[in-house]
Length: 340
Ligand code: ATP
Ligand code: MG
Image (cartoon, rainbow, N blue to C red; front, side):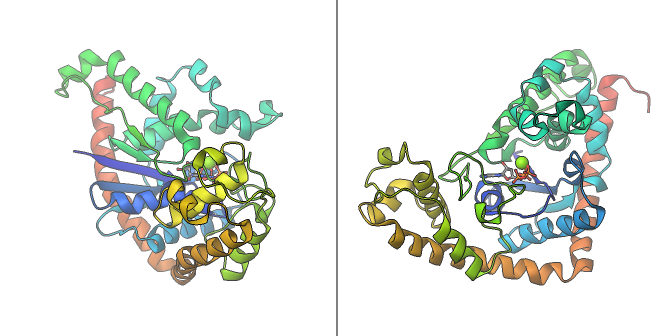
């Protein structure tokens, strides 16, 4: 059976990139798959977090999932630290993955910056924990933004190496030829890599010091309007064909955002706005973004006011996740030869 798993870090400032690259897909996949959506708090502490802010962010991401349309009754929403098997399987994968594989990860290089000696060991091992998140549920499909493609490839490599290294034991324990599926990334549509509104060469990110670089899911209509109007563009009118966006990253980004928000393709957006001035396009984009994002922000606010409700969703989700996790972790222990 096909199972979807994905996660979002509770690191503050949920933004339009998280929404279009990941959360929108979470909502769509509910119709066709069993879905598990995780607030990955163990990942968040790979960089310093203030405990009170972390707690608020965990609840905020949960609220964002629900406000966007994820149904916590039909599917599973929980926070990672409540299911201990994530950390347990991550340790096993630390022993499966090779140092050379992790050394190639570009996200570590970006996040560690120049002072690499001072980065946490957790930040370095992050992709092994991510592999564990997915494979703990033997998930087959993983909706993520473009930036996670390399980590997904590592998760596939981990699954494949485990299956090969322990092939005999996997068979002997009655699991046939392979224990883990090779999880497939789902990276589709016009907004798989939403860029900063201030710099078309940088990914929109929670950690960008400029709030004008991103549209937060919690932004009200005024904030959205200001940020879109101030978004960097070039002086040319919009092209009529997508080829015309090739050397224009800022224009390309805004067209992609419009297309994704409106359920269209970039050529469709350009056939409506190509040849016109940016100002007219930006006005339409403001209206569209306010219409789509505004209600989500309002609902997030309403939901986060009731921490007890959010916490009960997480506890219920964790209990259901734990059932699957325990089963698969027990199987992994048997395969490895641990006595239990
Ligand atoms: P951080 O800077 O803390 O890593 P982030 O914005 O990258 O924050 P994550 O929690 O790491 O957020 O990622 C959650 C999901 O959002 C992932 O699937 C990721 O690929 C996706 N995502 C993040 N940024 C973008 C973006 N700019 N465009 C499209 N998808 C994105
Ligand atoms: Mg990230």
